[in-house]
Amino acid sequence: MCGAANSNHLILGKRLNTAQGKKPRSKTGITTTIMKCNICSLIFANPQPIPFDIQDHYGVPPENYWKEEYFLLNDHYFANEIKTLQHLAPIKKGAKALDIGAGLGKCMIALNNVGFDTYGLEPSEPFYQNAINKMKINPEKLKLGMIEEIDYPENEFDFITFGAVLEHLYSPGESIVKALKWLKPNGIIQIEIPSSHWLIHKIINFFYKLICTDYVGNISPMHSPFHLYEFGLKSFELHGKQNKYEVIFHEYHVCNTYMPKFVDFFVKPYMKMTNTGMQLCVWLRKIE
Image (cartoon, rainbow, N blue to C red; front, side, top):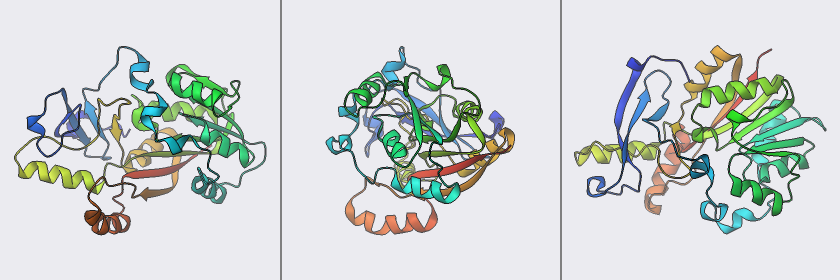
């Protein structure tokens, strides 16, 4: 993301391809090394897991990935993001939007409802089929495939969203650059990703050090669908300087801590106050 040399990459520890629990040394499985860039705080697996077939990575049935209520259409879905977008760049009817990693198509529906002419791409065949068959997404507006193998005309879209997608892509920086080609000058890209400053991972890593292990809680690189990265805000600020975009807004979402409720009572307010929540949301503007 920032172009830093390998000498700036710090080894954090190792990660199992299964839940590690309180005693990761008692578990069996495959481990990979987890590293962090000292310049931009990008966290990544090295080596990264590469599946035999891309559907081994993305082809998780939606029923296994989401709870049942996720399949219900909700008027509030993507509403906060649309409100932010309206503030940053007022939506004009007929403007074009692209949802990269469209999933079931719910974001496409939300964008259509506020006046966008919305398109999408989705690498998972089960999600793609469900979007068309269950959510009634127009198949002419949704492409099946990875961002690396799909193309659109240059300067085609006013708004592009990567919702919980970039952490799954092998080359996030190159994916942003490709999306920028499809984006009109002054167009907006919204990206939501796991934050490399999440407090819960710091607590877990501290605990692992106390029990004298070299494991870390960061990312689950070999869980399907794989998470390959966690991002810092500087990842985008420095990448943007090299690729003609700027970060115009960002925020952190606390989200679920996966900790006992009595712990949540203390850590959730602290995470909100210190910007150490799970998710980082960045808004980028293409510079002419």
